[in-house]
Image 1 (cartoon, rainbow over the protein chains, first blue to last red):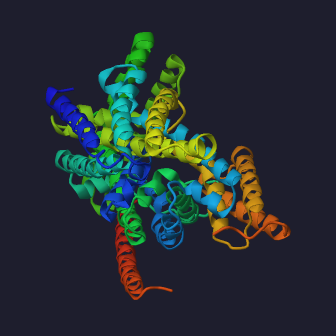
Image 2: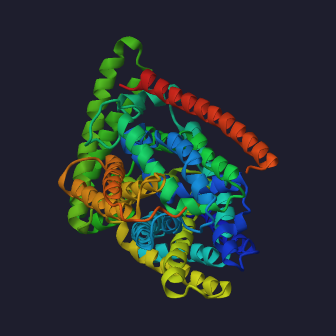
Length: 557
Length: 44
């Protein structure tokens, strides 16, 4: 990478750590460390919420998904605005007004200690795993860019994040998120602008080419429980996923518990309701733009440089033959793409048919190369995660590549820091303070919290090293979450029903998880629907048990 | 009992919340309409 790009990345890393430590003022009590003394404005919390959700997986995995699959992934967010509105009038006032540090702490106020501890435990497992996959995404970029082992790359990104999170608590995390969110948006707009300028055809022609391959299909109104990305799964399953994520996941709840008032907490969530779909569409459009760009500039046969190197070393001749074939196919496809762009209405269909045939030829050759890479390396290729990093480094001008890499790191850090912070908070508040040392002073809890942050950081790094081979990163993160999310949401929904009792909530949770586990392993039901199933089962079983159990006392308020 | 100033604050917050909701709705409709237009005009 060019020294100027390096300078941008190093300047960013230095700034974020130094600024994070500066923001540690006022964090010498647990109220300051875990809840910023409830002092944050709605826009700080709102940007922090958005930055937490927008991870490096979004910058690499989702843009790559846009290049290979088009815009339809955005449907997963169709339920988000609705979920934010529902949360604004239900869970947000309930949690903000109860004076808790964690969402699970509230469940003990409402139900009992075992429900609290079990949900907190589930959070620690699912988030502990997912923070590793989130860390793996920039690890992949670094590993590809610098040709260093993934473990070093993960350490490079993990250590600065752990430092500022450990020192500054939620306040440092939230303020760093604000700056990181700005950097991410600037980087996305910059790459979009460059794509528009460098594209050899007009935006209209670029859209025609993208549309001819189905990449501009946002809406799929078919109804299927087995299809992940449809309008209905996004609207219904997505609403439940977002309700669970923003309403019961400590990494998000902790952001708005730090807001000044219930009103400011609500406003912070509505910021996501405003901007999430447009922002996600922009992310996917960047990927679509890269797809069109590579119609006119020869793309690498394999985007993953490490796999390419391994294949060249072991099957040089066969790979070279494939590359020659690929180059010829590219020339034919490029002419076909230009035909599509210039065809008058009358000849458009014929030109498009030829183009699609040429595109299919290229994909077939690429398929052979991917199979070869998998045979040689013994790993799943997951080439989709390398498309954008490779494009950025080879095609973007000096300075902008550095800005985008810094943006990817920022996206990673903003998510990782919030998650480490919330993992440490849950470990300390819901387990250590609840079961081990209930009466220690704040200084003691702060020491333990900082230690917990460091330990979770190390754990996340270890998971990250293995997560990269698990599958398309975005899918992995959502799958980890979905397995537990619906059931935990069900418990919080029960908490709003006066007749619900502790035993009902706990039994419902266990049954809900078992049912989701069965659905996940034994049926082809798409993961978005599993959230709906989990929440519904917990509600139904929880209420049935509560109504049948007359011996229990009235719930504590 | 709710203090008068609390009630006033609450009403003001509710009004702001409702106004924001309307804006959220408008932004979503515009965003979805743009995506729908892209699909209708270009997707095959």
